[in-house]
Length: 364
Image (cartoon, rainbow, N blue to C red; front, top):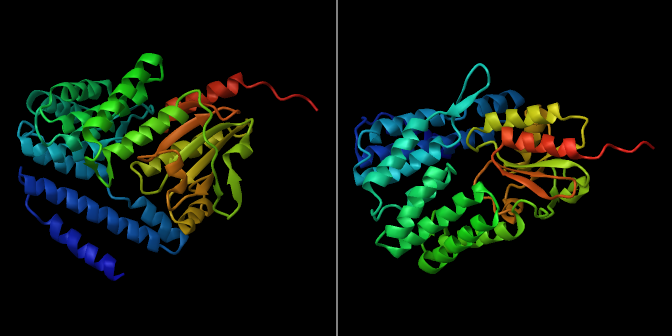
């Protein structure tokens, strides 16, 4: 509780700071976000009743509000070099945020703003020494327009280390575009350059070399058409569970946590998908990173209606080289991968197509 009290005081002090277009103001927003998320996470874990947990889950900090505040600071100054790092933070924060029409059509909440960031990088900052976080942030949107910028940085930047980081980011974006031979050749070439030029460059708590190694593992074992590696662990009830136990069923494998971006939306989509395909040879299996106690509470209270491997120490997600959540794989009855990406309509359409192709069950 003492830690929570200190966090509340720190957040309060940061929230009363004046707004101005400056590096210090952008940093204040980032720190406020970090402290607010930590406070919310502590409150969520401390909730001891179903009502308190539901209230805590619903009180997740509003990412969109922080993104809007950041944009108000940097939006008119994108030509200035100091905005590169906070613009990278903005891209990561706004990824996955959408507006939904009454008809259920979704559009990116910050589409115009993210395009303005791309144009600013391309128009003013292609040779900046501060591009490393921007290169990695451009990966989050998995957009061909980002790929074009990354390729320009890779070819023209005066620092070979930055070139190598851009090459790594290019390989990660290419991963989302398909698995044909030419794309695979480009990915491998980019990863080779990243390792040669930038192996020890730090990226958050890891390095370019480790991220490149993970990408090579994904190419070898986790691309479309490969048999997905088996997983073995415990579910929320302490029962042994293996991915291979579900042979013959279409599997939606969801790596998720209650603290991930747009958690409530992803949970709702997955819950609806489980209900929609109930009675068919289909199963949702989660790999969840919350505490075992909190996972059990979410299941008991009906927030989730699928079984999950309990993975609070990320041991299972490391086997799949998961770098960000949520991540979905759709597997056929032989555990072959048919889709990897975000949860949503593409995952559901892939699962439905596999179910339509599945042979009808034989009569006893």
